[in-house]
Image 1 (tube, rainbow, N blue to C red):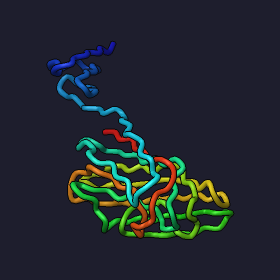
Image 2: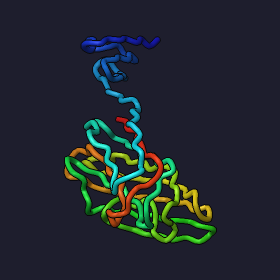
Image 3: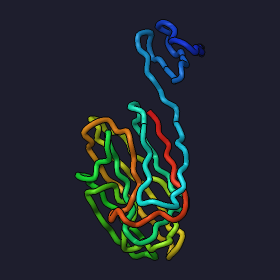
Length: 198
């Protein structure tokens, strides 16, 4: 039978197999000599995407291994593709390998880029088009992150966007930026939030 131990100050000594300890974090064991830290999913604070040319989430913990960026009715002032950029100390704007495909009324259009993870294409994204969906980034190892996402466009002919890519950072990821490829289109509706986990 498993044992649950709660402590607010310090961890107990080497626990028995199957123990779970709590000290601000969760810990699980699979043997008397090992202890693995398990981070629960943490929700960020939603940001209104109603102004500015970019939205940043900073101060991400070093233990993060997965991040999900979520859109709710997001739109911008023009048609530049949306992109998401990662950073370690500062936002990295180069050397991404990413592609995005849009499908609209059985017609497809693709776009690739190197300045960020493209999540829409310019071909099927009009101004004031509300975007819904999410993209998840996972740590592959050695500060390399892969990303896959799916988004739907409310305005238009049932448009869907599918995105995938990879980015190698020079250090531990601590920030995410949502912006457009031209960097000048402004956000004018909706909200954006993130989930992160270890």
